[in-house]
Image 1 (cartoon, protein in one colour):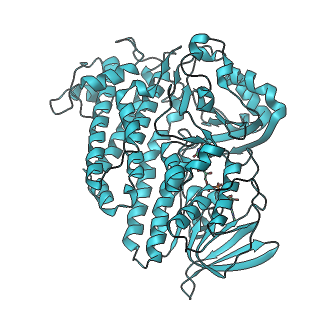
Image 2: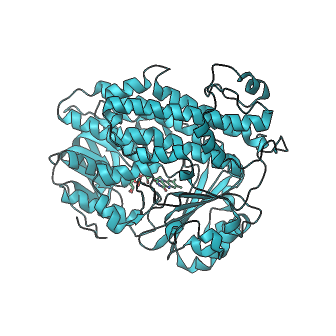
Length: 582
Ligand SMILES: Cc1cc2nc3c(=O)[nH]c(=O)nc-3n(C[C@H](O)[C@H](O)[C@H](O)COP(=O)(O)OP(=O)(O)OC[C@H]3O[C@@H](n4cnc5c(N)ncnc54)[C@H](O)[C@@H]3O)c2cc1C
């Protein structure tokens, strides 16, 4: 496998292809690779607007990967060796919460792994990676045409093929194909043409920039105790989040020895106009994250780029058509970068889409599959929205956010990651078992998560304390350790179903115990009450009515886990002034 920053252009070799991919970013290039890996004879043309090799560091966002997306890149696409040699290993996500002394990083509550997580992930320099993917695709026989701007797509012409019109070297050209895939991200060529845009009620803005050189936050304090929480060099490899009400700031190291910095902010708290230039962003940082400002401002001369995106979240009404077209990556939907899930969604998207393409090319009728995959994908997005929606308002509440992040990791590792690594997303029987009736395990999982996400919002008026100087490792919780270790375990379909059911049982107990803790503090309910996790609600009346015999009793092991992440002493909180719900 070769690695180079050169990505020279090629001409199209054919008038017609099996697959024409519009847009050669991460989604389009990885889809092509996946198809070529599965069937080297497929003819593919990628039309990419960018005419030059992508620049190192200052190319795109999407640098931090997590378990599911990393598994896709390493195992499904076979890029493990490349990633280990040319990109950085990642040391998980790391969170620093609000503090009365934000200028002292060692005083902030810190959440992140101490030891290397068993499931690997990477920090990716997107320019370097996309240049590599172009070359890799060419090596496998795909045609990649740089400097090709797609103008029009005419679906299903009289000859049964799609026709794509594009500009290349000032000439208008046309190419035919059996399949056409839109991977043009926010250009959304098919979405706009066919009108399947869908509103997304989650409005957050982001700005980001890259600077030359390494930023190691381990150097941001001389406190020996704080430094000793984990081995030298590991904090540097994490995706670092500094958080407070309405925002988080990211620091991501890149393999090209540069650093990516971003501010992601809810406009209800932090106006976009206060951050949308480098100068304004630094001014904002001086006020909201003074230590970041102190450590980063002296590097202003090393600025590589500065970019922004207003209201980045968007939805889609359609993803896959049995008329042999589909969308992948951000040309479909995008929710939020808080847990770095962009590559995860591309991975799932490409697995569904490539399965449809491969089956169709083997002359299988894909009508039912296209519909099942689309419903599964759309409900996955819809179930994921509450993870982010209105949650930026909670980012200044340390106790809630610690519990929420650990809950969100638990759900992510125990169900979607496991389904993905076991290739269950394209197993129709499995999808039926998981989602066909309201009491199916997949639907229960979605409902349970929604209940918990609502609970976090209801809890807000009661969580006002600013905590300090604590370190929490997700592996301090046995259930999280088990879920993480379980991600890459291979199961037969029957075993997998049992495992998912067992994991959801654990999640139910986890939800019940979290609720028990919160409700005891807020409503003085008995600490050993039985709880129905699907009925949890914090209003006093409902909370008390949960003391019924049908609920889940205390599980001592799960209680121990919840106590690890519980900061309040018994009964030391109560309702106080709250602006969050107003
Ligand atoms: C603020 C922010 C932070 C993020 N952080 C992360 C993260 O840490 N980790 C993560 O996994 N994801 C992250 N994401 C998501 C990530 O950026 C996307 O998932 C990913 O870049 C989408 O890839 P894509 O291929 O769909 O789009 P792109 O990579 O943008 O590719 C689209 C391509 O289409 C081309 N194109 C557009 N129009 C045309 C046309 N008419 N003709 C030909 N070509 C065209 C463009 O040149 C481009 O190369 C983040 C997103 C945001 C907004």
